[in-house]
Length: 292
Image (cartoon, rainbow, N blue to C red; front, side):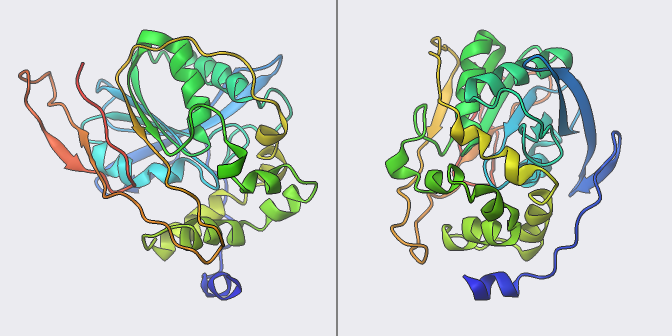
């Protein structure tokens, strides 16, 4: 592990973006946005990136740990010509709110609902991964038929099972802020030791930078120290469940990943019934979205 961390290039701090800043992802230009929305008696400042035609079907992406909106940059690059993509920094991550407040999975879902309402997002497809998935479960349940499809990636229904998530002990320990402050080691562990597929060095560097913003190391553990409460109402939208593989028994172990699946890409303006137009996903074992 020490060698892997040492081999990672230097990762200087990344200057925070400003609202309206743009960057290029392949052929897709994304815009950084900052929006204040109602929270738990306070205002939550959200950061997200947006790419794709404004009148196209909307896809909302929620990342895992130790990630940010950047986890979805290949997906946005692949889908941005056909979908309006919104990749959100979850509360406590990236450049979103790090202050105190409601960090329950259900509470953050309520705050995300307020954000989507403020953005006037009426109907959307939802794609989640890892720690973004419990929040996504609550969001999908709360928003009912506004969620057209749900690509649910790598998490347990619907809470985290401690036997399958040994990192929970780290996140709830008094040492958690110090451990999470070492973004290089956290990212290398997540992407090099616990994974099967090789990750580009440039992606590791950007992931480290996005996980190094002030306050992340103290905000992220709040998700783990609060009891997961509440019941979820039934949802009737189509969903695909991408089940997480068992965790390795030791840091040096390897786990396999399913082959990438495909995401349904409807033609602009509709399509004939039964027509399939698919493109490979490059960001992981996620299928997905079928026309209703």
